[in-house]
Amino acid sequence: MGNGTELGRVRGLGSAKEGAHHWWHQRVTAGGNLFLMLWLLVSIAHLPGYDYAGLHAWLASAWVAIPMILLIVSVFYHFRLGLQVLIEDYVHDESRIALMLLLNFFTIATAAIAIFSILRIALAGVPA
Image 1 (tube, one colour):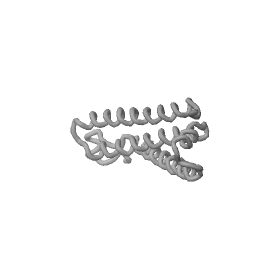
Image 2 (cartoon, rainbow, N blue to C red):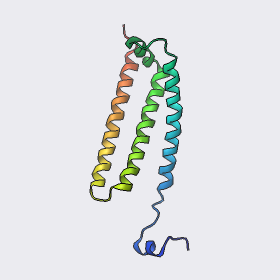
Image 3 (cartoon, rainbow, N blue to C red):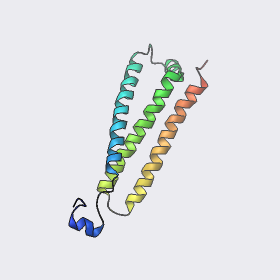
Image 4 (cartoon, rainbow, N blue to C red):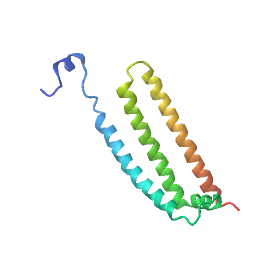
């Protein structure tokens, strides 16, 4: 008892015991995204001006750069988790592996570009 259906036991199929972990990560990143996006909206709303120099100086602050990097990491990880579920549920042929690899490379590359851009502004300081 408790080993699934008879057909599932015969085929060796059943729970992979990975669903709860994936589900939990999606919920945690969703909460983090909500919190960090609220911070971003409030922070932008309190800016005195929206010109290039003002936004550059704002992003050069460590108090802004660090939450922005956390936002990028959280959003892209959440994005990856969601599309992974989509691929696993709806793609049933050999292209599934290629799509998962493409998804991982795309997510890592775009997140790295965003983080590099933030760090370049933050570490360069305020422009003269």
